Image (cartoon, rainbow, N blue to C red; front, side):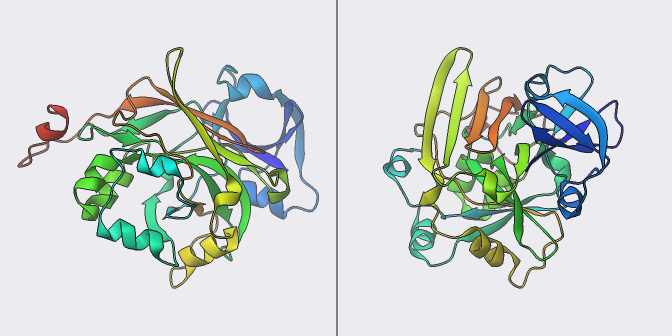
Length: 297
C-alpha cells in the first residue's frame, strides 16, 4: 500500500491511497489510522498523481505523508564505502572513529513536526554554515509499540561544518527551520523491493552536481533493531519517524546552495524533491563572530 497526504485551501489534510496513476482519497487524516482500518472509508474522489507529485495541481498541496510528533535519526548504520573518504567536510575525530567501530548506532533527536517539510517545499540552509550537507535516507514510521509499519524517504539536512568544529554543536547542525523533508508517500514494507537502492541527486539548473546511490542492503541493522535502539528507555509517541542513517554522501567541499534541487530517490517509494533556501536569522545574534563561516549574516 502507498499512502499520500494532501491539503486543499488550508483544510484538514486527508490521506489518499495511490492506485496506479491516481490517488484515491479516504476520509482519514492520518496514515496510521488508514492502516488500522479493515475496510478503508473512501470518499469516491480520485486525483491524478503526476501533477500532484510535480506540484502542478493548483487544487491540492502534497504534504509530507505524516505529521510526526517527533523525528529521531540514526548515524553510523551503513557499511562505510569509499565515498566517506572522499569528503573534505565530513566530521571526523576520535568520537566518530569510535562510533564507527561500536556495536550500536548513533541515535539523536532531529526535530518536531512543525519543522518537517513535504515534497516541492523549500529545504533550509543555515546562514552561519558554509557546508549544508544533504543526507538521503530511508525513514521508518513507528506505531504505538515503536514498530516500523510504514516507510518513507527523507533528507537529514545537516550543517556539517558546525558539527565538525565541535561535536557538542550537533543539535545546531541538525535542527533548524525546514531541516527535515519527508515524502512523497509512505509505503508498507512489501512495496520496497529486495534490491532497493537509496539514491541522492543534486542539481543546479541543468547541471547535475551529484548523483550516486547505494543498496539498502548495506544497512548494518534491521529496521526493528534500529527502532529498538531508539525506543529503549525512551518511549516514543505513535507516529514518530526514525531516519535510518546516511547511505550516500556528496563528496567535495561545496554544500547545498540556494536554488539547488535535491532529490532523495528510493525504489518502491519514489522521488522526494526539494529546493534549497537560505534562511533568515529572524533574531539578532550577539557576541559571536559568524563571519568566519560565511562573511556575516
